[in-house]
Amino acid sequence: MSFGTKPGDDEVLYLPLGGTGEIGMNLNLYGHKGKWLMVDLGISFADHRLPGVDVIMPDPDFIEQQSENLVGLVLTHAHEDHIGAVPHLWPFLRCPIYATPFTRTMVYHKLVEHGLENDVEINVIPVGGRFEVGPFDIELLSMTHSIPEPASLAIRTAVGTVFHSGDWKFDPDPLVGADYDESGLKALGEEGVLAMISDSTNVMSEREAGSEATVREGLTDVIAGCTGRVAVTCFASNVARVESVIRAAEACDRRVLLMGRSMHRIYQAARDNGYLENMPPLASEEEFEYLSPDQVVILCTGSQGEPRSATARLSRNEFRSVWLDEGDTVVFSSRVIPGNETAVYSLQNNFSKIGVEVITDREAPVHVSGHPSRDEVMALYDMIKPAIAVPTHGEARHLREHAKVAALSGTSQQIIAGNGDLIRFTKTGKAEKIDSITAGTLAVESGRLVETGSAILKDRQKMSFNGAATVTVVLDEAGDLLDTPMLSLRGLIEIDEEFDIFEEAVDAVKDALKRLRKGERQKDSLIEETARIAVRRYFNKVFNKKPVTDVHVVRIAEEG
Image (tube, one colour):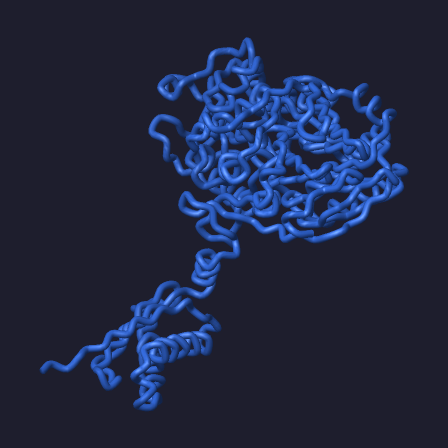
C-alpha cells in the first residue's frame, strides 16, 4: 500500500505503528472512507543498545505523508507510552486531539514545555462521552487502570464497530476515579462488535490483577512495622497509589514528603481535576530535618532505576536536606518493566549497602498490576463478543497467548499482527493482512529527532562496543612519512600498562603505508583507507575489536 492510497468506504483498516509486538510507544491508525484516525502516541525508554538516548518513539512517516487525511488523535489515557510522543510528533501531524480532562491536563503541561500550547487544539471529552470525527463515531467507555480516566474506545463506522481497549483491568475497588462501565461494555457486545483490539501485557498471569484497596492495606501494614524513615517509590502517574501512600502514612501518624518533579506535577494535575481531595498537609523539605524518623514517609519517583530520579539520588545521598540512614526502609511499590531489571536491582543494592531495608511486592502486597490477567481478558471477550480478535500491547509471546484466550472465548478469528501489518476488516466478519508498512522508530537525541538506524547512533553503538581510534598521518608532497603517525585511542587499551600494544598499532600503520606504491601515495583517500584498515585489522587480531577509526592526512609542501 503506497503512502497515498486511501481507505475505502467498504472497509476499516487497522495499522499499528508502535506497541504491537512490544511493550510501550503505542501508535495505532484506523482508516475508513479516505480518512485516518490515530489512537495514542507514546514513547518508550531506550536501553543499552542506544547509548546516550533516553527516549524512543514510533516513526509516523506513513501518516505524516498524508496528514491532510488524519482527522484526529484520540488518547486513551495519560501514561507516557500513550501520550509521551505528542509534543515531539504533533508538529508533523497537526491534527485535533481528543482526551479526557485528566489526560488533557497532562498533555497540556507537555505542550507548554515545548512551546506548543497555543498551537494544538485539544478537545476535552468526558469519560462516557461520545463524539464524531470524520467518518468515525467514537464512544469513551470507562475502564480501570493505574491512572485516572482510562477509556476504551467503541469506534463505530459504516462497516461495523471496532473496540479498542487501551490499557485496562477490572479493579473491583479502584479507590480513585470511576469504576469500569460493565453495563456499557455488555451493551456494546449486544449491539455487535466486528473486531476487538486489546491489551495483552499481563495475559500470561492466571491470577486476577488485584485491587488498589489491597495495596493500601499492604502499605499501611508495612509502614506500621517500620521504626525509621520510610521511602516509597512508585509511578507518579498512579494517582490511586499516591493516595494510598498518603492515607497509609496518615494511618501511621506520619507525614508525606513528595520528591521528584513529575510527582509534584501529577499531584497538582490530579488536584486540578478533582482527585486527591481532603488530603492531609504534605511535609516540605525544610520540615524534613525537624521530623523524627518515625514521623515521615518520602514518596518519590524512580521505581525503574532511572539514574537522575529522586529515588536514585536518595540512594546516593545527593539531597541537601533529605536522606535515608541505616535502619530506614525503602518500598518499591511497582513492578519491574522488562528491560529495566539491571537498573532496578542495582538501585536496590545501593540501598542495601547503606543499611536501608528494601521491600518489594515479593515480600509484601505493595503492588498490583494495572493490566488484565488471563481470566479478566476472557471476561472481557464474554462481554464484547467480537467476531475478530487482534491482540496488541505486548511482546510476541503475549500476543500468541492472547490469541489462544480469544479462541477459547469463542471468537471466530484471531490475527496476530506486528507493527507495520496493515489489516482490513469488512462487513463479512473476516479480516486479512493486506500489506506491510515500514514501522521505524525515532530517538530524541540532543533535543532533535533522529532515526534509530541513523549513522549518528550506529557510530555511537560501534564506539560503545569497539572503542574508537584517531590517526594523524603527516606526509611530504611525494607521499613519504615525515614523522611517526600519531594515534589516539579510546576504550581499547590502558596506555600505561599496554604501551607495547600501542607501539605495535603505530607500526602497523607505518608498515601499511610503506607498502603503497609511489603513485598511490599521492591519493589522500587511499592513504586514509589504508591507515584505517591497518588499525582495525591490528585490534581485531589482538582483541577481536574493530574500532571506529578516523584518519587525518596532513601534507607539508617543500619550502621554496
